[in-house]
Each structure stands twice: as C-alpha cells, then as structure tokens.
Image (cartoon, rainbow, N blue to C red):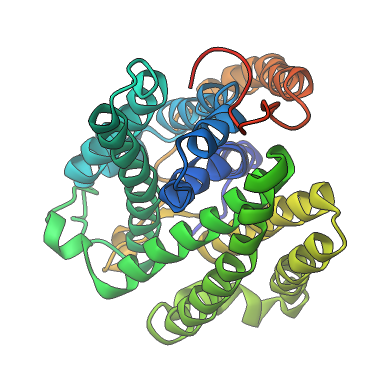
Length: 347
C-alpha cells in the first residue's frame, strides 16, 4: 500500500478536525438533552433549553461542513458510507430534526401534555443521535462488508453488533458528561446545585464505558492498536485523555467550572485523536482489509483537493470567528427570576 500524499493527509486530518469540532460543540447540546428529563420542574427545563438555545444550531454547522468536506475530498468514502448506512443516517437525520423542532415549539403552548410530549421528543432524540453516531464509528472501525468495488452489501441488523453498540453507548456517556459540565457552567441557583450532583455519576458512567470499550477494542479490533505498537511515543495520547478526564471532577470540586469544561473538551479531542491514529490512513475499514477505503483510493483528484484547500483556508477562519463571536455574545449564566424561570422570551 502506497502512502497518502500530503494533500490527501491534510484533507484526512481536516475532515477529522471538523467532526471533532462538532463533537465538542454539539456534544454538550446532545448531552443536555440526554439529561433533560432529570429536571422535574418546568422552569428548570426551560433554563436548560435557554442554556443551549442560542448556540445549538450554529454548532451543527460543523457537522454540515464536515459532511461537505467528506463529500468533496473523499467522494468514494462518502458514497459508500451514505449508501451502506442509509437507514441509520436517515434515522439520525430524523433525530436531529425532532431535536430542533422540540427546542423551538415546546414552549409555544402552556399545556402539560403538549410540553410533556416535546420534552420527551427532545430527550429521546438527543440520546439516540449520539448512539447512532457511535454505532457508525464502531462499524467503521470494526469493519464492514465491502466488495472489491467498495460497494456495501450488509444490512442494518448487521450494523447493530455488540462492539458497535458498545461504542454507541460510550458516545452517549461521553456527551452526558460533557453536557452536565456545560450546564454547571451556564445555570444558576437551585438548578445549578442539582446539576452538580449529576456530574460525578456521568463521569463514572463514561469512565466505566471507556474502560470496557478499550478492552473490547484491544480484543476484537486489534488493528486499531497497531500504530501504538509501531510507535510507542503515541501512548502520550491515551495518557493525556486519561489526565483530561481525571481533571474534570477536580476542577468541579474547586468550583472552577470553566477549567472543567476545557478538560472535557480536551478529553474529546484526545479520544478522537485515538480513533484517528487507529484508523489512519483508512476511511472505512472493510472485513476484507484489501477492500478498505483509504485516503488514497477514496480521494478526489489532486487539483480538486488543491482548490478546496484554498477555499478552506478562506472559509475556516470565518467559521471559527463566527463560533467565537456567538459564544462571546451569549457568555455567562442564564438569568432567571425569583421563581427560577429564565428571563426573556422563548424556550
């Protein structure tokens, strides 16, 4: 197997960076939704929605950008993934739609039944979306049945294998931890005190799933560990991920919520880096390794990659600047009245 060119490697990394950005930013939105029903008071649920309300749609820009980059830079991988995981991706799309609709309409009426339905839809969609994402990542790492022409010939039930489901649950646990920390950062008063009690259980849940998934990966997906055997210095990445995760409860204990959130963000970065190191240069691992899609056989032409890189050099700073501006404008905790209801209209 030939090595990827610098353009193919650059775009492989850039696609990974975009999806990592999405995991960090929309991860706490989805984690908030997964924890949402633990808040029993309507005012507390409104406050949680107000915490993510101004930013959740902007966060999804990173997913759209990542998908667009994958389509343009690696069209063969895009085509195989979207045909092979068609039903799962349609279900993911519906979950993201239901989440968006739930946020926008749940407070349009005062009825208990109305709000209860949309609250449930928000919680379920926010939980199933990361589960589906994790299952997809698990299948891509474990290996999917591809022909020599890179056509998928499996089915949805084959995708629901134990390892992929394990990765899916681990993804949900990670986002729940990330979301609970974000909510500690954004919520005031009684709700803040309650959410603080959620942080430690979500950390324990994630660490437990992380350990189990790591063991399962070493046993059943050994090719993911090969780069670490050949380059022992790469063990710095899992070490940094463990340190980032361990720092979260320490910072929360000292009421340093912002540092705890940064630690959670770095944990996601290092976990995505671990996944990337194990996969590189593959895009989709096949059950017959010779049929796998890689950065070499799935990429667009060198001219296309070059033109896109110029466009990305112009566009990426704009996306980053937009994201920074939104978070700066909506910095600080959600303001509430004496009854704990968020001030302002909506959500």
